[in-house]
Amino acid sequence: MITMTGSGTFRSNADQPQQVTGGGTWTTTGFGAGSGTYTMTGFASFKVAPGTLPSPPFTDGVTGVAADARAGLPVLRIAYSDGEQGVLIVSCDQPGTPPKLPLVEGSTLPRAPSTTGTG
Image (cartoon, rainbow, N blue to C red; front, side, top):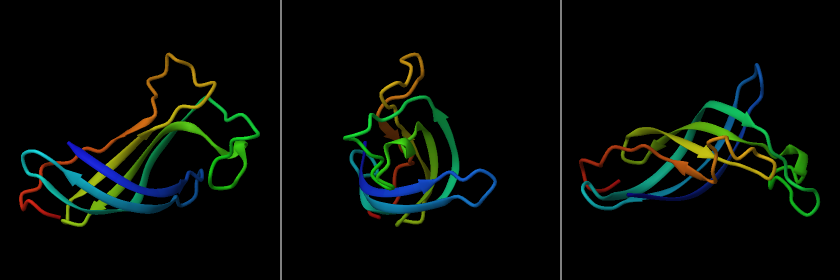
């Protein structure tokens, strides 16, 4: 199992370079247990899904405007402190996201077990 903490932002700008910032810490348990840090290194894709935040009182947490928030599925490239590369897949639904879409609040972080035991 991998546990992550951290924060970051991304901007999906059609036909322009994509901005990605952020990082945090990771810890794995079980076979190949380890820990270290990760840094966001690139933008792979973003699939927008229907859904909006009610305004007020909610905002997107970046611009402060509820209309700027998006439901969807961003895929972001990351680098681990142990030299491994990976992707972070975040699934985000919002009020109004149809229940038939395969979106939930959460993330997926594929990672092979560490061969060194530490990050």
